[in-house]
Image (cartoon, rainbow, N blue to C red; front, side, top):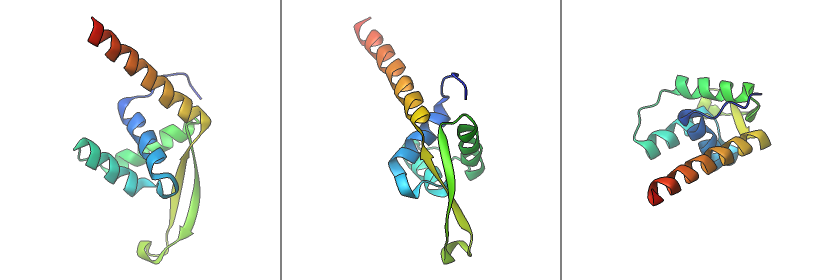
Amino acid sequence: MTNKPLGEFDELVLLAIGILRDDAYGYPIKELINGETDRATALATVHSALYRLEKRGFVTSELGGATAERGGRRKRLFKVTNAGMNALQSARAIRERLWTRMATG
């Protein structure tokens, strides 16, 4: 784990996981980010961020059950850890301080 601040995309992925809760796996995360940001994010980009976040200790993952709609493949489901929530709260606090300074400056 590292104290390096979150990048913008990693922050979006963590937020999407928190929003999706029990349905937080690659495709819905990608769709939520694309819909909210008007981006055309590739699924591979989301997967890279997920593995990067897991390596940093900001998310954990486990395999869900196999589904017929996925051809019997299991989903890798992600959850935000306490460290991930702390990183999100830190990023939010930094942004809020800067917005406040800009509004009063």
